[in-house]
Image (cartoon, rainbow, N blue to C red):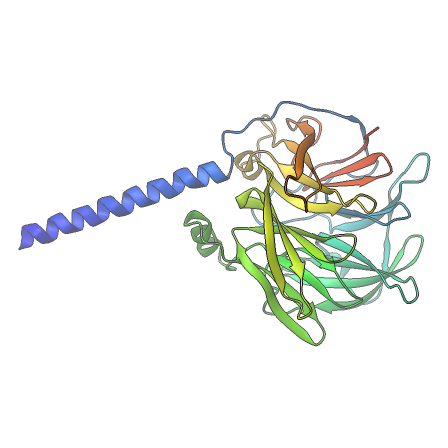
Length: 356
């Protein structure tokens, strides 16, 4: 009997070791650890004054671009110890230069750590609201600002909630309402890594309004960027570790109904939507291992992917830009406007490129 028990125990240990080995191989696969992308450049130049990242960028229909800079996030490099900042850039100006936005109100700017952003225009009076994911002391909250002058934001409200536990990005759908992605299943690093290792799709999209907070969609390995279609009918979510963009239809109860997934073949971060065409633009990481194990001698690369006709039976997915990290490292966002393209990064520089 003792021999049988030892044999069974040995078999269980061997099976567990094989399972863990398989999961590590799978982790290497989903992180695209062996992927290298050939360089594919556009005519670009660096945006002045952006030296420590422009993690998210969003552009109004009139060509005003908002930039979120200086993100500090656990496990990721940072080139600055200073608080994060928000900038505005007028793409209709012959020589666009970013202007730092002055923030008025009670927000603690000494711990300001901006991440994903979204802009909402109130059709009633054309007021512009900027929603910013903020991580003071690595917490997660959403700040709502009103854009009141050429270079001024007024802080209106800070939003926290137990469901908003690890916010990555946000898309505003009202003056105080939004959808947000949680990119972690647990606050604990070890537990979060375990969910990724085991391939557990436990990340979520949360809907927030003053009257209701709820999980609107779930089943993501790592929910990252989020945005909305020009007609406000659909929500797009980047499941970074699944290498796809998930399409959801909005319901009256604010739930999101899954429609389809579009494979992109890369680790895509933020999502921007062309106001005119509805095309999807993605800032992506070609190789997660290079990104997480930052080495200036072998830097993390950058990739920009465009999806045309995402609602058709055969969406067109194409690579627009690629770099090996020697021009721009760790691209996180690509925002088009009138033949131009802004490319922002997690912790490096930002580019203004010509698409024509």
